Length: 245
Ligand SMILES: [Zn+2]
Ligand SMILES: [Zn+2]
Image (cartoon, protein in one colour):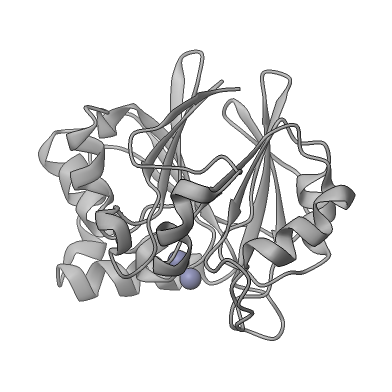
């Protein structure tokens, strides 16, 4: 299994990075983890054919994780995609899909595509086998008190486990989500400053012993973190970085 950081940035373009988007490839197929607003440009820049994407996993509906969907859908339409596409995400995904499509390109949500589109809303902590992947979504804390519309994912394929925290402040859900993962991709928005809804590196380090990931890569870094990169002893993401898992 291979993961490419197509976009490793935050919502504000810090470090000139693209919005969150990871391309996960297993033998014979590809999936996206999040699809931020800039994702289609980033995919094309990194020469990844969007038609190879079978499944898109969405952690939450903020534009830096979800706003690229309309561009991807229009690209699929005009490139005459025929392969089925599945989009999975938190409860509310079906309504959010229509809303983002209609905001970006009015009328686009009801265009009949040449490919079948399957939109699945996942229940928290429910194991789902989809294509080549097995997923468990964990509710995280990034803006709504019930955590219903915000997920971290534990993804298994080819006897490997990748966990992505999504955007979240610390929650014990991340322990089970990331435990012993071959790769934990964690938000580290700040170095040690604590703010609501986001994770800082110091808090993550405090809890890392409970998670014990085999490899940790930090992403979604704000200016504070990016300025510290030269002195950081942790592995960090950058756009285009490829990881073999
Ligand atoms: Zn974000
Ligand atoms: Zn967010």
